[in-house]
Length: 418
Image (tube, rainbow, N blue to C red; front, side, top):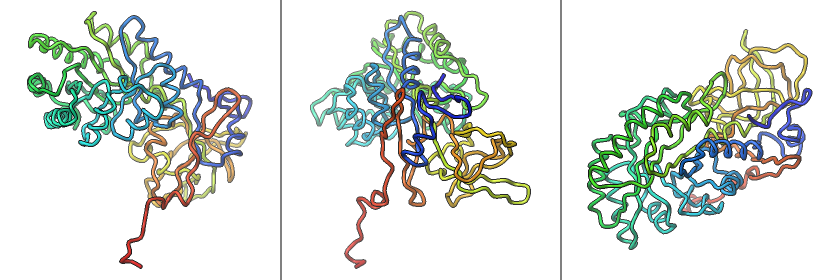
C-alpha cells in the first residue's frame, strides 16, 4: 500500500494534490510520502516479531537525509557500502553500533573511518579485504568486528545485473573459501568474528531462493560451531521485491516465515537489510510534457525528465507505471515516453499505452523511490532535480534543485590554459 491515490481526476500524495507541489517547486522532482515510508518500515519490522532482530535499512536505495532520519527515528539500523554512506548515516543520527558495512571494494581510508566510528561489523567479501581490515585495525589499536559474506550459489530469479548470490557474481566468497577465511580470522590479532553474512540479490519475488540460501548458511554456521567458533549475528541481507507492474512478491510476513522457519530456534540475532521494499513504492518522479511528436506510425511524448534522472528503464529495461497527474477523457495512445538526453536509450517507457497528454501536462512516474535519485547524474550537464517529502497536508523540499553554479563547483582551469 502507498499513499498516492486519485481523488476524482487528481493525483494526491497523502493530503496534497501533486500539481500544487509541482507549481511550487517546478519539474522534474522526486516526491516521497512520509506515511508510506513509515508504514513500510513498521510492517517489515513487525513481520519478524518474536525473534531477536535488527533491521538495517539499505542506504544505497535512497540516501536522502530526510529518509534516513525517518528510519532512524523508527529504530532502524543502517546497511552501508561506502564511506559516503557512513558519513550520511552518522549525519542522520544513526548510532555507529547499529551500522553494518557491506560492499566488495572498501578502501583503506574507508575502513579506517568505520573503525574510528565503531560500527557494528564489516561484512568481508574477500580474503585480501580480511587481511587489510586486520592491518588497519592493528594500526589504529582497534579490534575489527567481522562477518564473512558467504556466497550460497543460489539463483534469485531476478535481473542478472542485480543478482548477487551466484558463483559468477563478484560478491561474497564461496562456502569452502569462507571457511578458510574464518580459520584465518580466528588467528588474527586485530579481528573479532561476530557473524555470517549472505545476500543473494535484489527485486526477488519468490520465497524459495531465500529458503535455499538459509539451508546453505545453516550448514556454514554448524561447521563453524564444530570449529569452536560461535557467531552472534546472521545477516541475511535484503532483496525482497516490490510491485512495479504485474509482479506479486511475497508479503513481508511470508518472507519472514521463510527465513525464521529455517532458523529453527538457533540462538542468533538476525540482521536484515531491506531497501527497495521500504522506499520503492513510497516515491514518484513528477515530470512535465514538453512536446508530442510522430515518426511514421511511432508516437513520442517528450518530457523534461531523462535517463540522468531515472536510469532504471535504460539499463534494466525496468517497468515504471506512468500516469497523469490530472486525468482527462481523451483516447489513450501507444507511445514512447522519452527525455531530453542525446541517447537513444533515454526513455522512461517504450510502446506504452498511456493517457493522451499534451504540452504542459504533468506525468507521475510511479515506484521511483528506490534507485531513482540515488542513481541520478549530471550527464549532459543536466541539473539534479529537487526532492520533496509530504507529511499529511504539508510538504518540504528535502533537497533543493541544483543550480548552474553547482555544476562547476569544485572545478578549476589550470594555469597553463590561461
